Image (cartoon, rainbow, N blue to C red; front, side, top):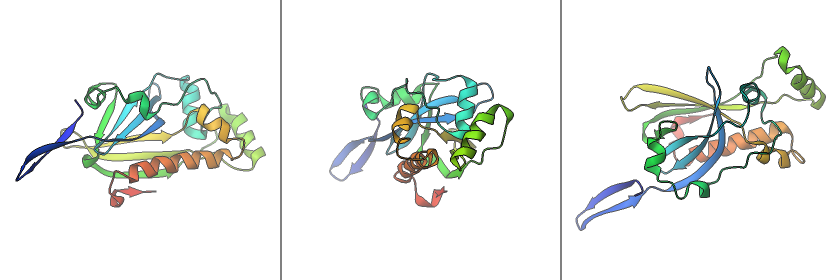
Amino acid sequence: MNLAILYETGAGSFTVPERRLALIHRVIVPDNDYPKEYAVLVTDRQSIFIHQKKTRGGFVLRGEMRYGTALVTDVQLKTLEDYEGTHLESLAADASNISIPHGSVTSLVMTEGDPKFRLPDLFVWLTMRRQGHKFHVYDFEMSYLDSANQGARFRFYAVPLGVYFKPRRQTQTRGAILRDYAMEVLRIFRSVLPATLISS
């Protein structure tokens, strides 16, 4: 059964099913041991960060958080249809996922990363210099109240998969693709959160 809100009126009561609005196909969450990849199912009441099988080694994922998508296209994009047959309650209750009710969110901040030089990234820096621009990755920090009513923060990076990125690279710069993806993520959250909570 889908999650629902019970409304009471003079004539009786009825339920309104929770609506699935959008799916953000990939974000990367930093972790001391290993960066984690999630798809984000956004409904009219909550955002469920659905843990995905790792697609790359830790070194590559950390590089993607600094410079953007690796041009590898062996992983297909998740869509809303992939989760049509999955109950929202099951996704929210899964310990490997993270569910954040929109009513508990206190702020959402998007920032543009400014990559710092590291010797292992020399090839990336030489590529940036040749192309005449830096590769900025956008990250988001969502602040919210957890189930114990304590303040919590959740940070994630808007990094699309290569199958999304590579075709666009034929006509757009890397920076433009990363910004467009981040702005789409921001647009989705603006559709479900009060404007006063969001800054970029």
